[in-house]
Image (cartoon, rainbow, N blue to C red; front, top):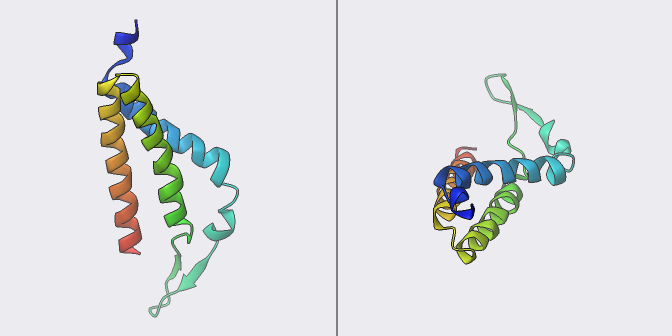
Length: 102
């Protein structure tokens, strides 16, 4: 039965679900203060500033995926670990691009 859960799709799902769950459980309330920061550009537009907590989110959301990745490697579920690695790389690239863009 354990062979049935050794699929890349399972790793992708776990890799997406774990950061979202951890974000809402631990960090959503603590960074609400950053979410309401607005600024006015030279052209008069009102824009919302990117939360100052983005580097913290990068480390605290991606790090648990790495721990789960090593757990699945230790359990010899290499396809699930592969899915986790793929989604972790995508999330990291996304957050880095957001950091550079703002």
